Amino acid sequence: DDYEHGMRSLKGSQESKTEEFGNPLEPSVMLSTLCSSFEEARIEDPKSPFDEAGIDLTCAKLCPPDGRRVAAGCSDSAIRIWSMDSWTALSGKGSVDSSSGASCNESVVVLLGHKRGLPIFDLDWNRDGRTLISAGGDGSLRLWDTKAVGSYGELGRIEEKQKIHASGVKSTILQGGDPSTYVPGAKPESEAQRNGSALVCYQGHAPSTPVWSVSIAPCGYYFASAGADSTARLWCTDRPTPVRVFTGHFNENINCVSWHPNCNYIFTGSDDKTVRMWDVHSGNCVRLLSGCAAGVNKVKVSPSGQFVAGADYSGTVHIWDVRNGRKLNEFRHTTLAAKNNLQIPIIESLSFSPCGTALATGSDDCAIRIWETQGLGNHSSNPEFASIHPGEVDRHGTGCITDPAKTFLTQKTSIFDLQYTKRNLLLSVGKYFAH
Image 1 (cartoon, rainbow, N blue to C red):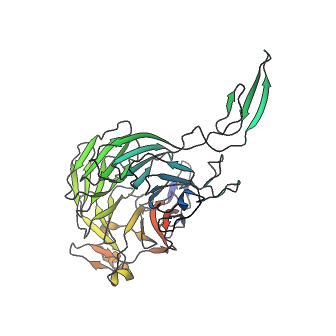
Image 2: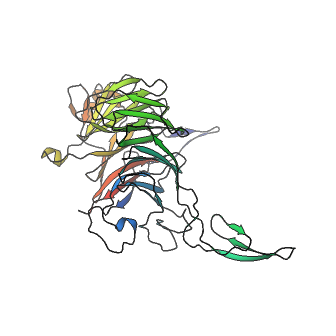
């Protein structure tokens, strides 16, 4: 409870001390912008994979824990990964601080494996920052090792040394790069590079139906998926078939899936305007969370596991109490577009701060909004909170907050993913719209 309410004091064995953390309601934001050539004219002699017309970005995820790498799903069934530092010192591609002067618009790793040229709809990183799971339009999920070392690559800086053995036989030692090689009489060859590797292909959803969402459990090993066949499924990484099948939604599209921090429950959001909580041990639905005006496209659980947030296609974020399934509050930003009955912005990403006192939302109206979530259960009953945060009361008797604590506007960048660090730095990635 103290962690949920944002306490910053740390008690040591000898004396109490306080660590400096950023304010989660006014965080510093790091934005990574990806460019797409989907609407551009055909370019002759392209210099990078994205200079070819017709490749669109469909999703993107920041690599934990610090967002130094970004994985993007594309409309051509490929996954492209960029690096923010020089872990790819062999080639320097995609590295913003590379000393080699290489172009930073080329992806470090391109993962190919999904079939039929259908888009990648969702990605999720494992906590180790190395393995990645993708959900594609071909109905399959794939596990990738993004740092696997391949057998080909560009020529590297290799030092050739001659060694004479006691028997008088000469051998060549090639040093430099990762890994170094020792082959008697070898000639200088291309240096091995990290190219990524497909490990497992998981198939279990109905044939010819896309998989919309995938989420890896906080403990690893297990992951959950949601697709257009009215089901969510539980998997483990060492089995190509699902372990559990969750059925109960009344619409064929289950748009999102998210894990509870204790790894015993998953949450799914569907076009039937509900969020359901499932027990992974029994496969039963244990909570039905309702009250949405449109289909639910994003779900996120607070760090304490007490609250769950769901964003629907009307641009509203709904907050429920997991303990009893009661709806507590709504966050709905009153935009000029909504007032003029224009297209309503769609929320594409949600992220709770580590202390649970703030919720960040990213939408396709090129804005990041920070909402205060401390004391959610008292919004509709606490007069003091109601006087500080005046808002409407809907037919369910819950409060509705229309003004975020902070708003960050981007320049034509739609937000795909948000992630708070442990010190409340907000990492974000999005797609730039040229028009």
